[in-house]
Length: 217
Image 1 (cartoon, one colour):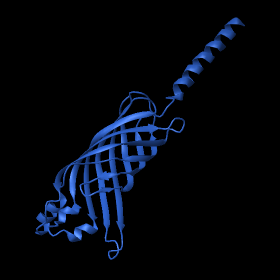
Image 2 (image 1 turned 180 degrees about the horizontal axis):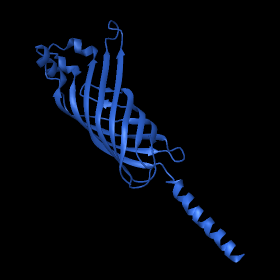
Image 3 (image 1 turned 90 degrees about the vertical axis):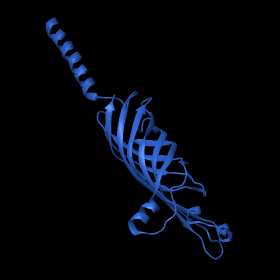
């Protein structure tokens, strides 16, 4: 009888160990996890007032494509950076421009193609870890003006639309569908206050992290 009881106790201990291994990680991410993501996103802002009483137009479109790197400090907090290709077109027309005799096209239009370095932090909300929130700053370095590329293509005399270095402040809200053992997809909405020479615009859009590869754990 003692042998039978001993065998049953041993079986219980072994089965507990097996189920504990099958249970897997407690969290979607763990401290020191590292992910490499492929990103694709776009934002848009547009407003137009009556040209007779209040002639003001604001427009901004941008896109992002590139790689981001995530490092998890805690299971719920990650810091992110990367390198993105960022084409952008913006136009801000103000009433006072009508009185400016030496007004140039690039005083109210910019069309830079930028290399963008994001510096951000994101939170996987505890107990609701698929909910993904974050904010940070994007450093945008214009490398060329897209209107100049259009000039080369169709032969028009276009001014320099490259513009100067500018920053934007993305604020994210969305869904983290990455797997706790492998990688996966993230999809989140993005509000991006953008600080330009001509003024500040706040476009809204979506960011799709096509896949996040878990490169360290």
